[in-house]
Image (tube, rainbow over all chains, first blue to last red; front, side, top):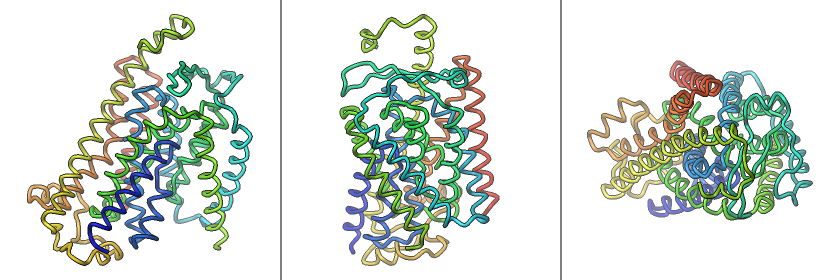
Amino acid sequence: MSVSVFLTVNFLSSVVAGIIGALLGLGGGIIVVPVLTLFLGVNIHYAIGASIVSVIATSSGAAAAYVRDRITNVRIGMLLEMATTTGAISGAFLAGFISPKWLYVIFAVMLGYSALAMFQKRHQELPVGVVTDRFTEKFRLDGSYYDVALKKQVDYRTTGVAYAFPMMYVAGVLSGLLGIGSGLFKVLGMDIIMRLPMKVSTATSNFMIGVTAAASAGLYFMRGDIHPFIAAPVALGILLGAHLGTRVMSRIKSVTLRMIFLPVLLISALQMLFKGMGW
Amino acid sequence: MSRLKDEKVPDKSHSQEDSVIGQVEIIISNILRFGVLLSAAVILVGLLWLIITHHSGYGQDLFGNVARIIAFRDGGAGQFPTALGEVLGGVLALKPYSIIALGLLLLILTPVIRVATSVLAFLYERDYLYVGITLFVLAVLVFGFIMGKGGE
């Protein structure tokens, strides 16, 4: 394999990962890691280091646009980051004590259940009848954004922070422990428990994943897992892709977004199940 | 702001809150955009420099041995910089890998700086609940970095 082939394949697949990551509120590791290891023969440690970079690149690249357009709910993001960052560090501590085998199975079941819950909502463009509970009210999390696809201002309410907060902690532990994207769980927590509009859930997840990843990125860098030759095309490709993804996201409807999200959810659930069962 | 025209008439406190959070969002968005553009520019310069010179600056020749570079993890020792001092020294010596690493570090730091700036933004808006929340997140991040350093 020549230098130019490596750089081109790496860059182009990262653009795709950036688009999907920006759309769905994920880090893009789902695409970056398999492409690097299976197609390009990159060492797994370098691939994971590059995927940490890809999470941060997706997050910052996409959030710059989403925050400006007010699709991101900054307060929700900040509040839940308390749980995700603490979780990420707990996960790093726990890594030596817990066998990830059963965790994979448990999380696979959780993802599968969530896929079902999301499938039932597949025709729902915006949440209806959400009532802010009294605890959630304290944090002033209700919001409003202009939906380009619907051509109208969307006002929404927020609920269930008391339940979403522990789930975000678990999502953080997951990313610290298994090193896999906790973006899925963040989106699901906001969609199913807090009942936010789908676009707000994915954009706010995007906002948060960069901070969760940054908590451990320094460690990966000093350990020598972030290889410049491998991570550079990933970072540039992801940043371009994330920029394109934000433009797509504002123009499509939430029901379409769910239709893209569902298969990714199912594939991830199966991947985790396989890993947990050692198949 | 003309987008808000069609909106149902908001009560006063709500619209006040809207303008406050709007300010915070503009600051955060600008910080993120600046961090992303700066790091992308530095990474691009380093990558182009690598492609032009065909040399990493760390004893690795790029011709014909891509698989050798990417397939084995030799602890990273000496192949590319893994500490801030090494990175900065390498940048001064115009080593391509160091320039790329500097860009990657800037990218990693962007979310941290975003959190730090948010503390100031919320403080400026006298939103003390969220000053506290954001400070907590910042403290956890700093703890994570220190722990990472100590762990090695």
